[in-house]
Image (cartoon, rainbow, N blue to C red; front, side):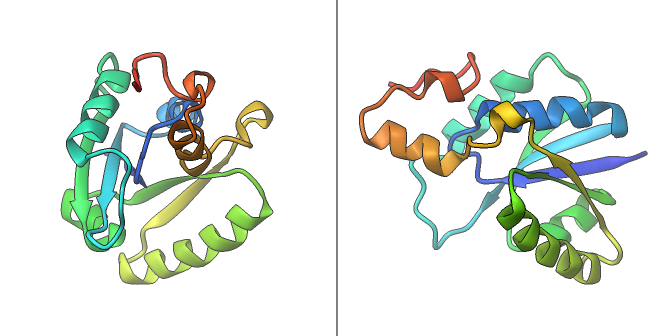
Length: 152
């Protein structure tokens, strides 16, 4: 069974994340959208809220499972039997960063492969960081988040 993990903070999930998972579905038997928990990082939304949003967004698709983990992504993949990591690339800077991380994950994760999908041009400017800035600045983030998500 081909299992991929799509790790992230999803603080909050964006339409770019959803597009990436949707496009990757034909490649894998199961995609685990997994919230990585870093206890030293400050999040805008609680873990429970982010998990609930992910469940709402992907509830209609039985090939997608929502989970969370702490510590190394590669170790989480080994624990659940995933042989693939799914990552999105928006630009060259993403590639440089993700290439290094994928090489380290390959070593630490016992040969785990990272599959990169390039962001659609209309989504390449969207990131959780930018969406958080819009939200904390009092702007309307609706165009950048899935319709299932209501941020007040």
